[in-house]
Image 1 (cartoon, rainbow, N blue to C red):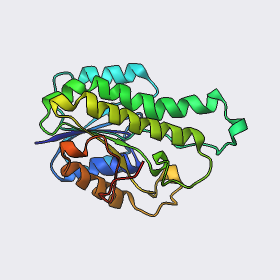
Image 2 (cartoon, one colour):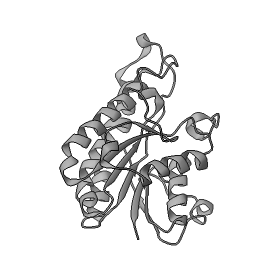
Image 3 (cartoon, one colour):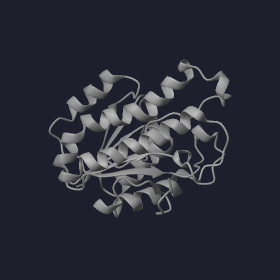
Image 4 (tube, helix red, strand yellow):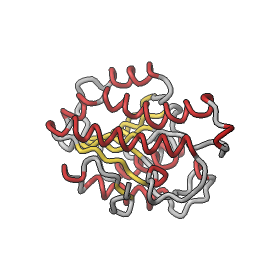
Length: 227
């Protein structure tokens, strides 16, 4: 059976990824900071393993990679992230506001991707996906503010673009994915899409992924998100 690792798998988009892949018969590694609620775990298929992962804790990333040493993984979906928090004016932004967003949304996915490179090399599909945002687009995103969040997602796209070049020779397909505005806790349940709709679309992009798609920002609707 193919295998997938999903971070932030205990709620929202991450939980829906785990549900859909498990129903489809995949081996699922659900990595999150806190355990899944029993009622959520009960909705998953039988071949699901929970592991702990905290994006703000380097030791937990190292421990996760150590537990997975030698195990092939076909698809890695680095979904764990945080929102913009309070919408601050430029003069109110401090390092205390900026750093956690950049570390969680940009450094942590890159760091874990590097640790899981051996697992992806052993897998057959070799797809490395991360959850980006329309906020990463300079030409498309029109909302004001959200300075740190926008910077974190634009930087995340650039990191995946770099990985698509660095890891091209061994066949890794690097996909930053735009989920759309999804009704989850991060959006105060004000989104236009359900998690099921968003994840169904993103899974379709992952399923048809080719080397030519690597390094480009893809939407849940299957369209390229302009830079």
